[in-house]
Amino acid sequence: MFSFNMFDRPIPRAFQNRFSTQYRCYSVSMLAGPNDRSDVEKGGKIIMPPSALDQLSRLNITYPMLFKLTNKNSDRMTHCGVLEFVADEGICYLPHWMMQNLLLEEGGLVQVESVNLMVATYSKFQPQSPDFLDITNPKAVLENALRNFACLTTGDVIAINYNEKIYELRVMETKPDKAVSIIECDMNVDFDAPLGYKEPERRPHYNEEPSEEEGDTSSYAEMDVGFRAFTGSGNRLDGKKKGIEPSPAPIDPSDIKRGIPNYEYKIGKITFIRNSRPQPKKVDDEDALSRFIAFSGEGQSLRKKGRKP
Image (cartoon, rainbow, N blue to C red; front, side):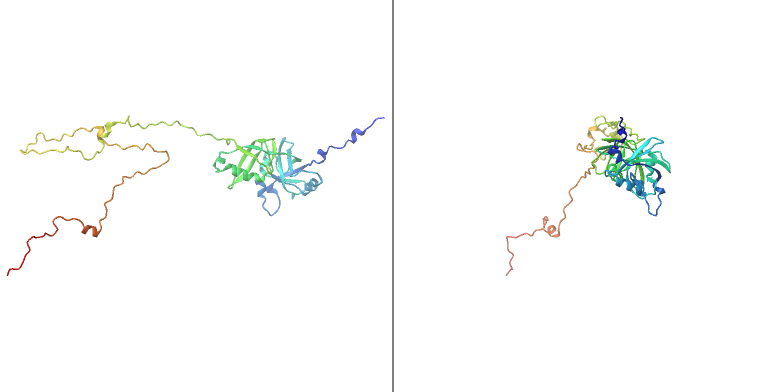
């Protein structure tokens, strides 16, 4: 007697709770409806048909719902979350940047499978353009944009919208796995040098200004030094002009007063030094009257003047 119970083994529970199906994918711009769904382009979530929700509710799927998208023709894959279940049957809508990563065209087939991903602890991004450096606080901008994403996959090029401009960033590294979940996580973010970025060349700074000791004193003689004593010409009493030519003494560089340098000068600080002179005091009218004036007093006589009889 032979037993054929080998074919009656139960299917493992992991495969029973696994969602796997194929859809034809289209970009969000093809989504029919009066409402503008441009918010889907700003994140990493897709729109699936209602039948997918019915099938997922029957399975013991762990939340949040995360999916693995695979293009079997190009052997490219990525991971995403789900935003809504309002697509037509057999169709799912993807962000344009996600279709570019999967090398999918409009109406192409994509395999959708439910997965469980580990929570992210670290991720590294590389901007695809040096324009990303123009952002004042890139980490805050990226943190705000990643709120619309559910997971990250190493090698993907994600797109974020900031200030009416789209910036592309390549996911260079993720920890603890190549595909991680970023929902309600504390993740450290790092940036690599942007693609095509060149560091500015640093030229050595040479101090070409001569020091105080090495200054050329010959140029001081050409300076306007103002008044110089005993440099005029004289006149003779006899009217002759011999020996009356002026003979000014040569200027000694030590006689020229030079400015005193500010040894406490700091780069980036401007100091205004003003030579203040004491202003003359204003004299009031009462003080002017009480001033001493010479020979303005009255005299006294010892002899009293009397009337003659």
